[in-house]
Length: 185
Image (cartoon, rainbow, N blue to C red; front, side, top):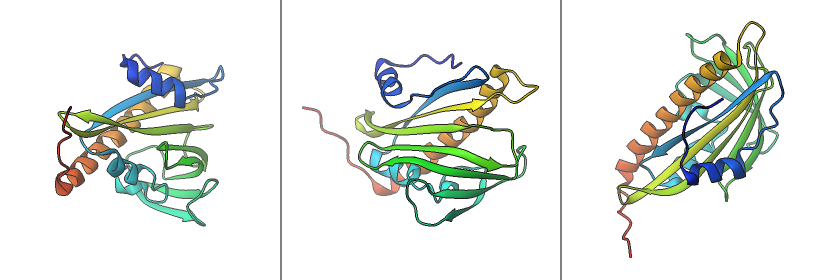
């Protein structure tokens, strides 16, 4: 569904890490964000399944049931203005070496049924400094009464907002960290 043009590097990461089994009544897409902050800093925010409110502007509260591990479930309260108030989400995969997080929505008072997403975080160089390429992909059922395009547009808008906020928070922290430029040989 995504009309975006991806670079060769982005395409390779999407092909390698962002595989979704898309059914007839579902839509799927991948989005990318280049962040002017080092990968370790961006990953430190993304990997915190128990604290999405650190960078996701629509999350007002999150309560994790048990310890942070694969299979953990979090209850998320959503800020007003969205067509939902709660979401129940399960951590499907977390790899700190490859910087991969996958989650699935398992309940809540919204229309995002059979939603799952994969987020990957990759180091890159931006303007001679350590930067990060973040890719988020998803698959979700198309609700009755909506089209695939409408559903993808809505979910993409939420993810774009989250990625913009992730960039803002990460870049603010990176300035405080004063990471040195990478010297090219």
